[in-house]
Length: 65
Image 1 (cartoon, rainbow, N blue to C red):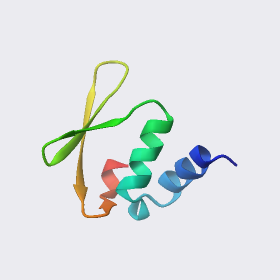
Image 2: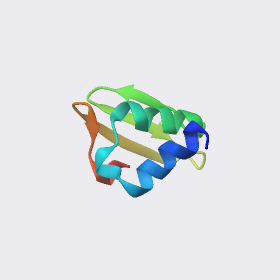
Image 3: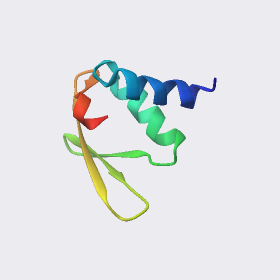
Image 4: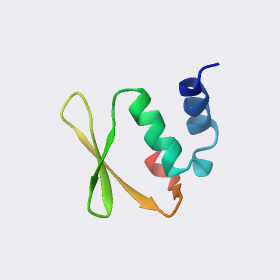
């Protein structure tokens, strides 16, 4: 199983245990990098929609995953 699939499985099965680094790697693997924007990170989707993600220490809140 490739790293991308492992990260995706972790995001689906255990979102509360995703680190910000893992989420960032997963987003980049799917061509949707996170861009810093002050205290938040912004992800631009192909349809023009923006997702805003707040980093909470080393982890990410589960509703952002």
